[in-house]
Image (cartoon, rainbow, N blue to C red; front, side, top):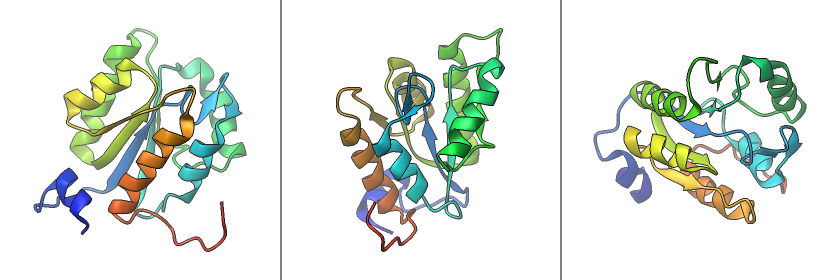
Length: 161
C-alpha cells in the first residue's frame, strides 16, 4: 500500500470495497449532457473490478432517462450507482445522507464535485474532497487520479488517453 493510501485509510485497512463519489453536473458533464473530457477520460480508466463509481446528484428521478443515456453514451462506470435526490428532500440533505451511507459501506477514496454541498457532505462523512473549479476542470480530475492511483485503482492501459 502506498503512503498516500495509508494516510487516507491508515494501516488498519477495512475489507469494504473501494469507491469514489462523483457529482454529475459541472463535474463529468455540463449543461446536463455535454461531457467534460478530463472527467470522462478518468472515469473510463477506473478499474471497475477494484473501484466502484457512485454518482450523488441533485437530479431527481425525472432526470433518470437523460442521466442513464449520458452515462451509457460515454461508457462511464457506475450507471447503476446513481443516487437521485428524492422530490421531498433538499439536495444538501440528500448529499449529506448519501455520502454518510456510502462511507459506511465503502472505503471511499474521495468525493469530487463543484459545490459547497459536496464539500460539506464529504467533510461530514470523513471523506477526502476534491473540488472542481469549473474554469479548470482538469486540475481536479488530475488530483482524483492521483488519489485513485495511490490505491492502485487503475487498469493498466497502454494506449494514450
